[in-house]
Image (cartoon, rainbow, N blue to C red; front, side):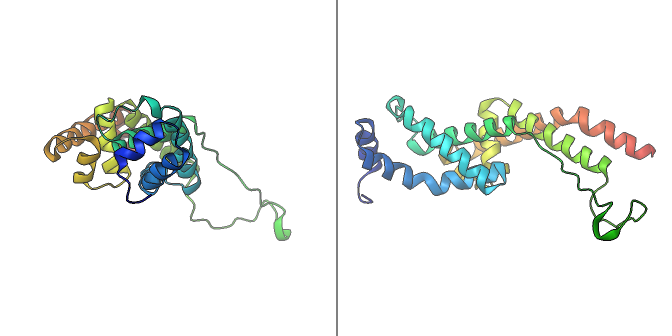
Length: 198
C-alpha cells in the first residue's frame, strides 16, 4: 500500500477500511515514537503514550478535517497523550536497607556517589516545576517548544509539522522560553540565594 497517496488512505480510513487505517498509522508510527520518547525519555512510557494516542486518533478519525495535515494532527494527539502521562506520573524513591547484608552492621558506612537526599529532593522539585511550567504554556507556545527543545526535532521540521514559517516558530520558541523562565523563578532564585549563604 506504499504507493497509495495519504489522502486516499485517509478517505478509505474514514470509511472504515482497516487495511488503510493500519497503513496510515504505520507510516507515522516511527516519528510518533521519536516525539513521545523525546518528551518522556523512557521507551516503555513512549510506547504507551503512542498506543493511547493512536487509539484516541482511531476513535476520532471521522472528525479529522485535513486542514493542517494528518502529520500535524497525529503529532498533537501524541503530544497531548505524553503530557497527560506526565501529569499522572508519580515519581517514587526507593530506599534499600543494607544494615544486615554480608554481615555488615549499622555502624558500617559505604561510600556513595549518589546525590544527597537534599540534592535529590531539589532535583525532583526542579524537574516537577519545569514539567508544570511547560504544561502551563499556552498551546501555541507549548507545541513548538516541546517538539524543538524536548523532542529534539529540527526547527524547520517543527515549522512544517505545525504549519508555521521558521521565523514564526523562532518567535514562539523565544516566548516559550521566556514564559518558562518566569514560571521557574520562584523555585530557582530562592534556592540559589540559599546556597549562596550556606
